[in-house]
Each structure stands twice: as structure tokens, then as C-alpha cells.
Image (cartoon, rainbow, N blue to C red; front, side):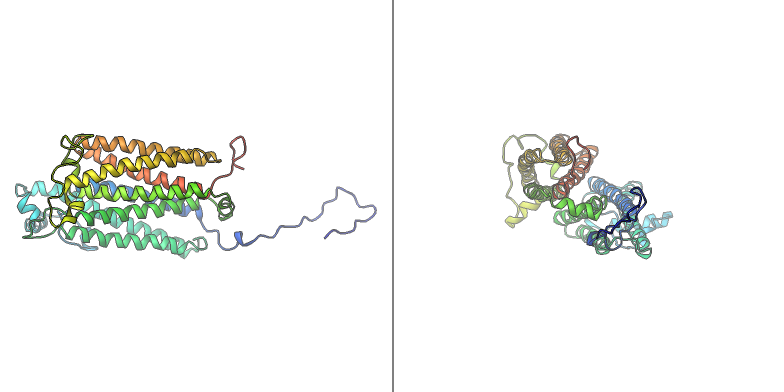
Amino acid sequence: MATNRKLFEEVGADTAKPVAATGVIDAGRGGARAAIRKWLFLLFGLVFLMILVGGATRLTDSGLSITEWRPLTGAMPPLNEADWTSEFAKYQEIDEFRLQNSWMTLVDFKVIYWWEWGHRQLGRVIGLVWAIGFFWFLLRRQIPTGWTPRLLLLGGLGGLQGAIGWWMVSSGVTSGTATTDVHSARLATHLGLAFVIMGFITWYALGLGRTERDLMQARRAKEGKLYGLSTGLLHFAFLQIIIGALVAGIDAGRTYTDWPLMAGQFFPPQSFVLEPFWKNFIENPGLVQFIHRMTGYALFAFAIVVWLRGRRSAHPNTRFAFNAAFAAISLQVVLGIATVLYEAILPVALMHQGLAVLCWVLILRARHLSLYPIATSLRGAKA
């Protein structure tokens, strides 16, 4: 409300300026958003490394070298010759050794043991990093309002991942059933959950990179059509990742190594020889690789549609995000073909798996920006 000025009051005299009242957007704890975001980046890097080590463990047939699940005591590796002999004896009792690796000596066994031990150890490190970070921010009351359940979810999913990891390994630790590998569907579940965890970490990190006020204002400019398309692309990519895990689980990538045909023909021979019929879709190398190829082509075609729509966005950052996602998907198609032609050798196969993570993250980033676009001026600077 305006006040009456005195007749001879100087116009330039200092007067108290009213302070604007903040609304609901600014209420509650802002928290240590930057610090939590750095912690999430650390977790992301560790999970990414975990995926690569897991891929190497699978490609080197090392996953069944440790036949027991000991979440606490298993952190300690064999320390003397007697310990090594005991671990090797346990491995010699399972089908993988008897039917596939009976040629192994203790020296050979140590190589595959260290791969699996390193993989499990990384899981323990990830759990420890999550626990230390979460309780540090929680006890210091630095978690932003509404974020505690989200960060707690990451820990819960990590614990579930450890249990699923053993559920997967236990399917291959058998004697007398002629089983020499883990069940491919369980492997796909294990890898799929790893990508879900990385997806949550990425989404949370993107959200913490901007203030709640900024996100709420940005959502008013949401590009609904583009957001829907990018969500579809995200789900499509996840399906392809799961099918890729099925390929890895039965070494299907090393079965048919010609392209664009398979054994000289479009549809691979002997694609429905397993009984019951449904097993062919998850355990027949020819059919599983064929499905992976066809899904890859369809995913690439859909990615073109999404990219063309993304190029029409009114926001430069969003357009760039969709360009980056499409470029990564295009490179992934080329690398997938190379993986087939080079018979899924370790370096090429690991690059293919690592690039899948990059595609996943870039699709998520493009989706986030279609939901929360960054407003820019005509010259391209942030508004």
C-alpha cells in the first residue's frame, strides 16, 4: 500500500523495499543437491563398471567359478594354497567343470575365479558407497524434501540385485543335469535390473541438476508428443537390451557370424528344434540372434521417427539431446554388426555392451528435456 510523502522529502532518500513472499515452490529443505548429485555420479560410474566386468565375466565363462553365496565372508579371497585347493575342489563338482572345463589346472581356475570375485566385490563396494552416502546425507539432514524415498529405493534395488545375482548363478551351479551355463532368462533379469538402476540414477541426477522452481516452471512448456515418443523409444531400447542379454546368455552371438544373412539365408535353420516349443525363443541360438537382429532394425527405424520429431523442438538443448541419442543408436547398430562379424570377441562385445549404456543414458536425457525443456533466448542463451 502506498504511503504519503512529506512535502519536502527528498526523492532520492533511501526507503525500505518490500520483500516478495516465497511460495510453495521454495518451501522445505533445499538440501545438498550438488553434493548428492556428485554421489549419484559416483554410483553411476561404479554400476557402469559393474556391467562391464559382468560382461567380461560372462564372455570368459567365469561366472560359475565361485559356487557359494557368502555375502559377508565371501569378500575375502583364498589366501593360501589350501584355500585355493578347496575352492577348486568345489568347482570340480559342478557340470561346467566336468563337461566343459575338465582340462583346467589350478592355475587356469585362478584366472576365472578372479573375474567372478572382482564382479562380486564391486557389488559390495557399490552397496557400501550407497550406504555411506545415504546415511551421511540423512543424518546431516541434507536430503531435499521428498527425495529420501527415492534415494532409499536405490539401496533397495541394489540389495535385490545382489539376490538376483545369486539366483542367476545358482541356476548353473548344478551336478548331474548337464548344465554348463546360467539360465539365460535369469541373466536377462540380472542385466535388466542393472539398467533399471542406472536409469533411476540418471533421472535423479538430471533432476537434481536444476532447482525445483526451475523444474516446475519448465514443465509448463512440456512437449507432450515428444515426451511420449521418447518414452516409447526408452521402452523399446530396454526390450532390445533384454534380448541382447538372452543372446549373451547362450553365446548366440558366436553361432551365426555372417551378415546380413544367417548361414547364407534370411531365417536361420533349425530355429524350432527345442521342446517345448517356447524354449526356442530364449534358448535357441539361431532364433534368439535372429530376434535380436530384427528388433535392432525396428528400433533403429523407430529412432529415426523420434529423431525427426525431436529436430522440430523449439528448444536448442532438446534438439541437441535427440541428435546425440540418435547418433549413439546409429553407432550401436554398426557396432552390433561388427560384434557378429568378429564372433563377439571380448573387446568388441564389451564396447557393444558399454555403448548400450550410453544409448540408454542419452535417451533418458532427451526424454527429461522434453518433459522439462530449458528455455533459451533467441541468441541461444538461457532465459
